[in-house]
Amino acid sequence: MKLALLLLTALVYVSFGQYFEITNDTGYDIYFVYISYSSEDDWGGDWLGEDIMYDGDTFEFDISDLAWETDLFDIQLEDEDGDTYTFLAVDGEEYGSGDGDNVFTVTLSDLD
Image 1 (cartoon, helix red, strand yellow):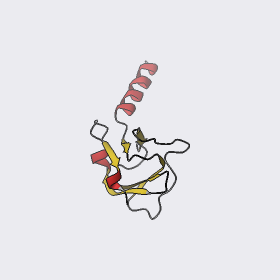
Image 2 (spheres, rainbow, N blue to C red):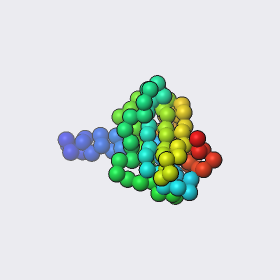
Image 3 (tube, rainbow, N blue to C red):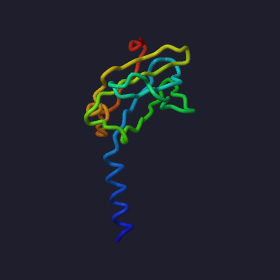
């Protein structure tokens, strides 16, 4: 019984996970991704870590631990040349809904 309850809890948690899904269509590799609350003064740490978001790649960035329902987020990507692509006041409910409509594509036209 306990195992069934644990599995059900895990399934509910996974199905309601919140994330931003970002596709790199810039023509360049992305080396850094920063996601922070719009109310913050700094970007915080790099969400890619050791990974590289190659051109054409799509990454999911799990924001389940953040207050995605009530806050706006700023997202900045930095490519191999140090160029940045910044999105301000991204609504977590719009892009972080987990319903399949949370994908957005970064293109060269988004260059800062």
